[in-house]
Image 1 (cartoon, one colour):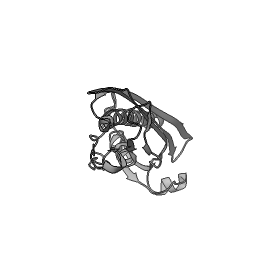
Image 2: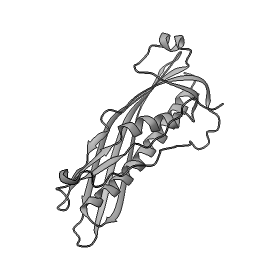
Image 3: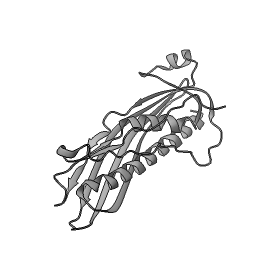
Length: 209
C-alpha cells in the first residue's frame, strides 16, 4: 500500500550575492528523496508527524581575506519539512501532519500508532575563499542538527539528537560563485540528516518498548 503523502520539493535552497545584486543568482536544490537501504516494507498503520524547521535559514559566515563583502544565505526550512515527510513516507504506511504535540490518549483517539516529532536545532554554514585572479579555491562547511522524538500510543518515549556535516571544496571564478560550494554542502548535509532521521524512526518503531 502506498503512503498517503505526496508533494513536490522545488523550493530554493540558497540565495547568494551582495546586497546590491542579491537577485543575481537564485540557485535551487533538487528534491531530497532518501530510500533507506535494506528497508523494504513500511510499518503498517497511521502515524502522526509534527515537524519544526525554525532556525534553518541562516547567513553564511565568510572567512579569510577574499569575498568577505558578499552575503550568502542558506534557506532550508521548507526543504527540511518536505524532505522529512518524503523520507518517512517510505518508512510508514500513512502519515498525518499535526500542528501541535499530542498526549498518548490523543494519539489513541486519532487511531494512530505514534507521534513522530522532529525539531530542527541548529544550522551553521561557513565559506572560505582563497585569493586568485581568474579562479579561486573555495571550501564550504555546513552543520545541521535536529531532535527526534517518537511517542507511541503505548511504551516509552524515544528521544535522540541527530547531526549531519558536509564539507565541499570547489574551484570558482567570481566571488558570486561562492554560492556553489555552499549549495552543494547544504544539499549533502540535508540528505545525510534526513537519512539519519528515517533510520532512527525505523529503529524506534521496531523496538517493543
